[in-house]
Length: 163
Image 1 (cartoon, rainbow, N blue to C red):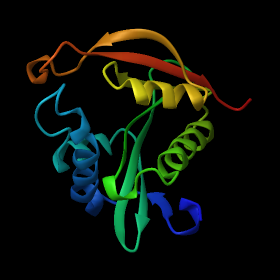
Image 2: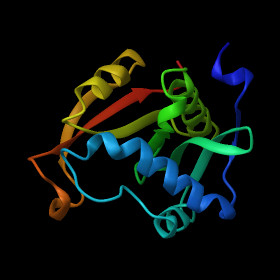
Image 3: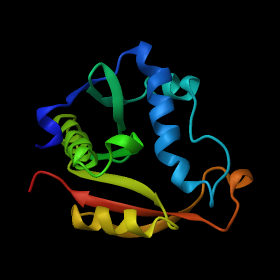
């Protein structure tokens, strides 16, 4: 049974900020060998929600996944990030569903291209996004250099939408 049969996707409410931060931090613990500290906080989630949308996956009244979507500064370009699925809900297709929801949201907002930043140390994630149709197009320094434990950078990836 696919994730869609048991999980509700919806836009986040302000009261979801703490649960979103918790899911993101749990999912990003896999990056602890590369980057120290929590990935986000409820305050950061609330601040980001002012400039974009969090889409959440809810299962049994619990937020088990999320993705943040925003329109970029370039015309017709949107970004998504903080894609996270609770560890006990991974490998069931929910990540793919959240990416598809992010892409659909960006299309509705007039974007023709989706972009993401992926930590270069996450080779399995880079390969996963490539299978979803994303291609690398550049690099960017990691946003919080004071937190890095080993040299890391972002790989910038993009995908044309609406084809």
